[in-house]
Amino acid sequence: MQNVQPEISVIIPIYHSSQLVADTCESLIAQQGVRWEAIFIDAGVELHASEIIKSYQDSRIRVQALTKGSLYALMNRGLLMAQGEYVNLLLEGCAYLAPTSLERALKSIKEHNNPDLFYTASYIGDASGTRHLFYVDDWEDALKRGLQPTLLQSCFFKTTIFKKIGYFNQNLDRRGAFDFFCRAHKAAEVCVKSEMRVYVEMNRFPSMLLSPWAIVSETYQVLLCYFGISHALKWLFSMRIKALFGG
Image (cartoon, rainbow, N blue to C red; front, side):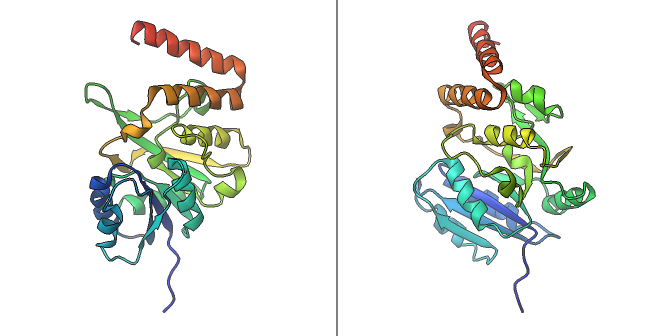
């Protein structure tokens, strides 16, 4: 009997949170009503991550080593290996809210006529630990303010979108996702649909992605590329005002 092509490929780069990999594996294996594959790209920063993944002995799960390159280089490697029609990108420790999360997401995608990018909502915690729903409908205003419409793990990408507008910018360590959203917004041939529903839970946001200077520098660089010097400087000035007054 021939293998049936997966409907969705889930790509998980492993950098600094191998202790959370098991949570992601358990969540994947629990998924029902959908054909999936999982591709873990291991940067080899921490020991035992690959051993934990392989211990599940599930043929739908693959592990690939890539010891050089940024987080987005790991994601790109996984994208090149993906066999599903759609791709979901997770980080270590991400878990689906229910065993039917992927099934529901694919049902919504079909109801929206199979767009190139289907994005959903995220939960984001503030400094006090309070969680807020994060979902932006007005892309242009959000992007000019340095904001993504949602978090990366709340997106479902049609595999062919990367042939249309390219893969993630591997030269960006922190804002590769923001750069991709800007490209998708500018591309007239890309069909984007969304709904305000949360499918994915992120247990912990990796500290490696939170370097303030890198975030500011790369956000400015991306805004300059896609929206010009005036918007880039306006954003930079707004960041300075927030820093001065604690906003």
